[in-house]
Length: 134
Image (cartoon, rainbow, N blue to C red):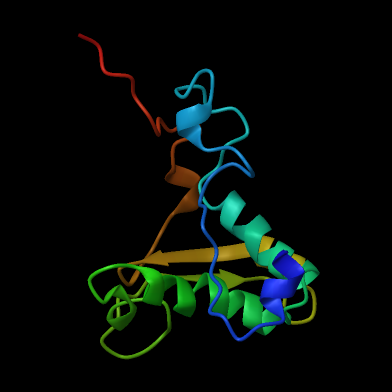
């Protein structure tokens, strides 16, 4: 079905920023970090779009511009592309993703709100879900 949808002119975007094929809410222990890393599911989804017939460029646009356009409250006006006046969140890669889509995993630098993030200072075991205790 995915290959058929890619052949249409239907707008397509990614729909996860989580562990591939498993939402945290359905995990037996949602607090256990395990193999979940934010963004890995999105990268896998972009790679899969290429497997389903998109060009690397089309797949990247699906995960960025089209994804922003799909968000509520006109978020596409604020993010999804690199333009003056938009939120300065971006990723710099060490290799060309247009030559090989798996190069989207070769992250050199992350910028959030125009500030370069020191990735070495990020927590190794972030808590992404906390059970409510009565």
